[in-house]
Length: 146
Ligand SMILES: CC(C)(COP(=O)(O)OP(=O)(O)OC[C@H]1O[C@@H](n2cnc3c(N)ncnc32)[C@H](O)[C@@H]1OP(=O)(O)O)[C@@H](O)C(=O)NCCC(=O)NCCS
Image (cartoon, rainbow, N blue to C red; front, side, top):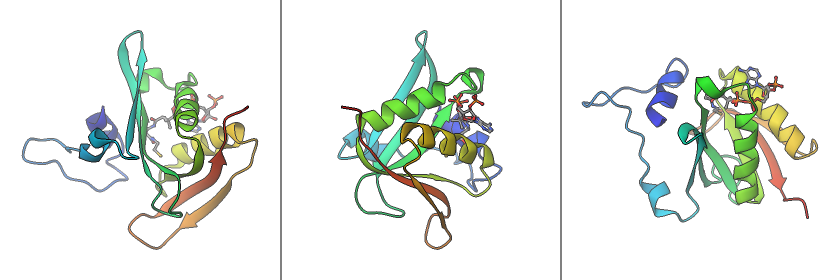
């Protein structure tokens, strides 16, 4: 699924295929745990999407960063992305930052709607223009309902 995700964003995310014809995303850190996590969505036992979570690193030093997030085309516009986001935030409560690349306008629309809904509008948004990662970042604290 990572290969499909990377290809889908390849017009706005500069990457090259390796000698095996793959993007070859490095999952070593997620395999080890230690605040790196992978969540996979199944629909009727078929892979339908995933989320990768890392320690916060762009606008804050505490909490979590939504490193990658993907729903297969077949399963889109059916609230599966919303359900996956809710599951991930509930699994890792606390401070969050979620970023989208400047040209990923559909992802920006998705995350603004989902985060506004899950936080009752209690989030801020910043434009990151300096550093190794640039784009739009929503910042909030996710606390599960008592
Ligand atoms: C963005 C993505 C995860 C959305 O997944 P999804 O399961 O289709 O999302 P949902 O059905 O839960 O959508 C919830 C709301 O987000 C908004 N939304 C979702 N996709 C959208 C799009 N392409 N354009 C504009 N708004 C969108 C809509 O308001 C939608 O509510 P509605 O269905 O009532 O209109 C999916 O399109 C995807 O994987 N895209 C490619 C990878 C990517 O960009 N990932 C995010 C990286 S930051």
